[in-house]
Length: 202
Image 1 (cartoon, rainbow, N blue to C red):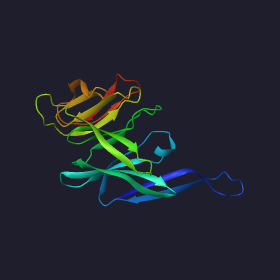
Image 2: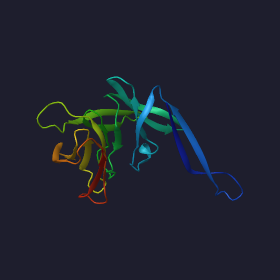
Image 3: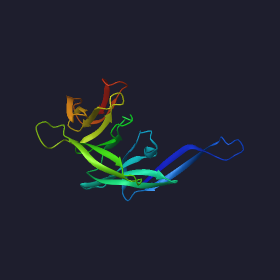
Image 4: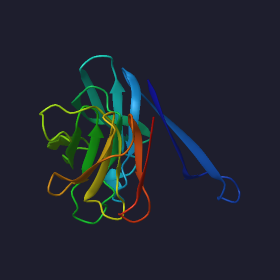
């Protein structure tokens, strides 16, 4: 139920003035923390920004966005999420003006838009709900995903239904889906570039 954040970028006030000093910050959540992801944006408002997902054995779960202010961690936003997130990840697109996006997997792939509200808190809005099952409104649970760093419009998910799906985030459509294993696929990761990924499973 605790999130510990270490920062070794501070410096102590010894004679040389150059000895690194580690700072540890703790945030206590009211539920078991199951997943987390660091924001990659370089702008000051996004530094030390972490998304965490709850693990509650029921339909209703939540995602919280944690930030640091004046040496303390605080909850800048919280939003409902059906079932626990199997993974959450911020968009690797950190270009100036790029949308600040957060993705989560569980029963579906969801894309969320995150915006600062000017007070240090954040507003979160669901941008997309993506289903990898083309023949039904229901989706086999997704176990994990990876966001392509070379081309942030590409995101890949893995599922218990033996498939991996490559998504186009911009158009919110599946580029391709393949049967990757004989049984459940537990994780997926892109190599450098945008054309190669690996998957693991049963």
